[in-house]
Length: 145
Image (cartoon, rainbow, N blue to C red; front, side, top):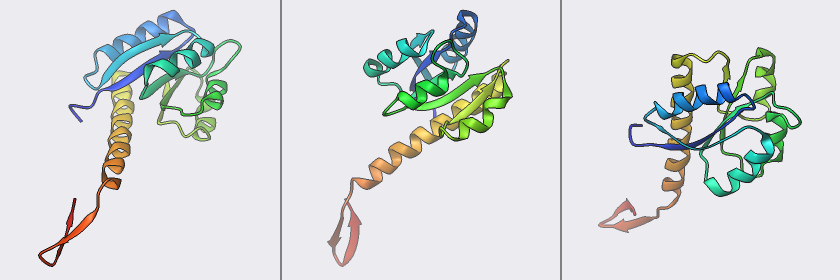
């Protein structure tokens, strides 16, 4: 887990909340901040160019909500939803999000979310590696190549 660095983006209409998330991300050894956005429209355009692994997404934003953004993405990265209202937790399951952070965010809870995202990332990439092999018979034994 030490060498994995997830490229991540913060999306929150609150500048103060974004600043707080940026600090948490920059202090974390497994995260690399590649962008921050204040609304869903900017985010959708920015995600096309950045190659993002993880999206820290505020649910409540003006005009287009975090859930609306998720519905509009074709190839969504992993998502950790952030909100001040616990009511959205159940709905988050419908979007297959990696985790759900309730404001105010504690360091322990943030670390647990990132650990989950890193584990998912490693699992996705390990599966891809496993698919790229063949078995060859050599000296009456099957060998994985």
